[in-house]
Length: 247
Image (cartoon, rainbow, N blue to C red; front, side, top):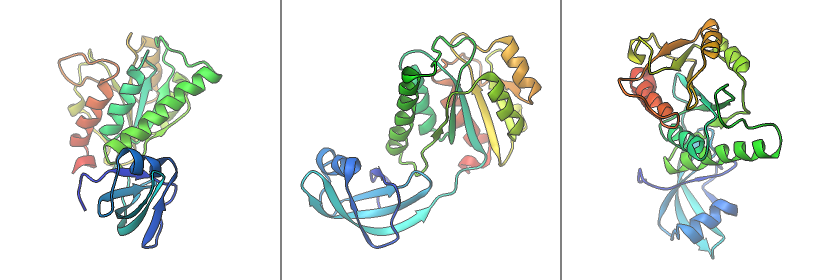
């Protein structure tokens, strides 16, 4: 089975030898990707279980019959990376989610930071913004051929983020002005590693104090200042090398 076979998401990966891919994913495979009999694809449930398949037949532009070649379950990498991403304006928030997903984030917590320009107030507008982040994570997981879709939680306040930090194996606040580099930290081999990325205006002193009181460490990535939309991806890739995640 090719490593570049496209991934399609299903509710459940069947245990039998054949299945039908229909609905939105089936239409995408048949009408957009125009997959033909004999071509390969992967179906995944977004929770680590996947199956390599070969297209047997195509039913118009609606569905495909698949033959399952191999079925497997991938454990989540350890430590789990939980990204607390401050809300940022425009489509940069979705870019942050996309890049973090592609580099392997496990959970994304939209953070209502004090200096965030965007607030995501309760109601339809906030729900719509959250739905965009979740859709972005789903599509990015498919694009990067992940069998796990990151969980995008409800928005969190700084107080809620501090509670998360207290329960985590480690929490790291990214700060370009920090004296300690991220590679100099003692990082856990398992459990939840919370990564905190602030908004365009940075994390306030009171927020930093609250999180550090809850056990967070402050560290910089390198000599340059990254955007709020790209810092998480760079940090997640770095953590992939510094922890057992990418070994």
